[in-house]
Every structure is written in structure tokens, then in C-alpha cells.
Amino acid sequence: MKVLQPTLTKVPWMLAALVLLAGVVLDLLAPEPYTGLPLLAAAPLIAGATLPFRSACAVVCVTCVVSVAVDVERGRPATPLLVDLAVVGLIGVLALVVNRLIVRQGLDLARARDVAEAAQRAVLPDPPRQVGPVAVAASYTAAQAEARIGGDLYAVQETPFGVRVIIGDVRGKGIAAVAAVSVAIGAFRQEAEYARTLAALSQRMDEALAREAARSGPVISTEGFTTAVLVEVSVDGEVLYLVNRGHPPPYLVHDGRIVRLDPTAPQLPLGVGLGDLAPAGPVPVDAVRLPPGASLLLVTDGVTEARNSRGTFYDPVSSPRLHRRFDGPEALVETLTEDVGRWTGGDHEDDMAILVLTRRGRPPRPL
Image (cartoon, rainbow, N blue to C red; front, top):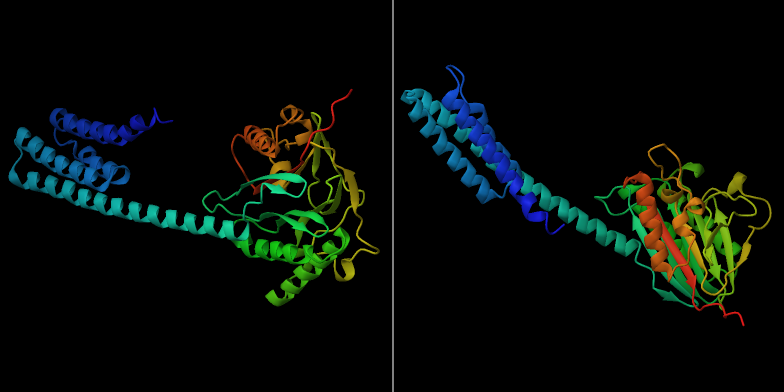
């Protein structure tokens, strides 16, 4: 990329010069009443839209001089000469105004991106790399790239009951989803410290989201939901406990294989399982053994609903790039992100979050 950058910066100069040259040639060779004035006037517009302000000023001045020189060469009277100069000069001034507006808009966009990035770091900070018995890595790609934030969420927290994790997706995406994300993460961090079981944590988050919805005004229950997977890693790292609340299932990656961990009983998203929709009985919790060196891969629907050019959904289990051994959670996150990018051709229609927990240590070598 560094090799191509100087060449790319010359393109606006070359384009403005070619248009200016074409205007001169047309003006000198075309029969009356045809002139090259439209092309001469186009050169400052191109410069104003693509070059720095000083460079654009230079192009405007050169174009004015060329316009007068061509009219003198053609022997035109003073009145057409002054008219041509006025047209080129007026368009040149407009081009400089456009240049300043473009620069100002770019600065405003840069500030907006900085604010959005700061908001994301405040609402969705990077998880710690080591928590209890697991190593952690995460990646976030927003559907609205200029916003750098969306409706997906994740959090990792060490508690008296083990390492607890959430990955989820609030209704909506982009800046409009930031408030819902902050509520969901805040509820998780608060309740994860006190709920004695993962089922109790799930129920407490239901109640917390319902209280927030009530404070926010009359909202239909099915309109304010959050899909999520809640995870608890035992203190020794031996066992994973999972509660899936309407979210894409996680995957166990171990020994060169990847297995999808479907819930034993489907559950409603958080914020929906209250009132008449509340399920009878306790929330089911699945237990999965986590061998040393194994990874739990958690994703949002930006991964599982990514489509290729034929409209086929991406399936991590079917990807040969994921059926291998990984040195750590970062390698798995990077490989999956690149694989989804290849599958979609680089287009992201939805927010995409990836979170990986890898149990530290290696299995003993066979004797």
C-alpha cells in the first residue's frame, strides 16, 4: 500500500491537467462557435473537489491565465475574453468554496468517529486477556462502519462463582442501539456478582431489563428484547455452564475440531420471558466439559447470518479453516474474522461480535 500511495495522490493532478489540456486543444482547433470553455471551467472544479486548498488555488489561477492566453491566441475581442475569464473565475471561486466545505465535512466526520469510538470503549471496553483459568480474545465489527459501534455486546467478569460471560445482540443496530447495549451490560455486571447460579443470573437480567423498559415508557415486550448466551466457567476451568436466551449457539473448538453447542431447551430472549410469556419452571442450564487448551467460541448473528454471493449463510462448522489447532484465542478470532470476510466479499450487513475463551494449559502427553 505504501508503494501505491504516491501514485494515487498524483491522480487528481493528472486528471485536472488532462481536462485543462483538452480544453486548450479544443479551443484552438475547434471551429467557431465551438470552444473549449466547458473543459477549462471543469479543471478548477476537479481541483477543488480533490486537491488541497493551496493546490486548488494554483489550478484556478493557472486556468484563468490559460483562458486569457487562448482567447488572445484566437484573436477574440475584449468582450468575449472578459466573459470567458469571468466564467472561469466564478467557477474557480465556487470550486474553492466547495473545497472548504469538503474539508470541514471531513473534520466533522473525523470528530464524530472519535466520539463514537470513545462511546464504544466506554460502553463496550475490551475484555481482559486473562481471567481466572481462561485466556480471552474478542473482535467487534459494526455494520455502520462510520459509527464504529452497534447493537452487539459482550462482557467478561470474574466473580465469586467463577468467570461469567455474556455475548448478546440488542434489537436494532448502529447508534440507536447504544443505550440498549449499555443497559444490558450494566445489568450483567451488577447481577453477575450476586446471582448464585447462572439460571438466577438469567432471571435477574430479565427483571432488570423489564424495569428499564418500564422506565423508558410504554414498550411492547417483544420489541425490546436482547438475545444472549450467558456462560459460567467453573473456578478450576473444568466445566462450562451455558444458558442460551434465543441467541446463535456457541461452538467448542478442540483438537482440530469444532462442534456447535445447541441448547437442550430453546429459551426466549432476555426481556421477553416475563408476564404471560414467562416459561414454567426454572431456566435450563447446560453443562459442557472444557478440556485444557480447548476454546469456547461465541458469536453474534453477524457471523451466522453472513451471506456469500449466492445467498448462502456462513457456517463455522463447515469451514475447513476452523478445523485445525490454534495457538490461542487471538488466532481463532483472527481466522474467523478473515474467513467471514472472504465468505461475504468484505460486506457486513449486520454487526458482528466474536468472543473466544480458551482454557489455559495443555492436555498431558500420552505415555
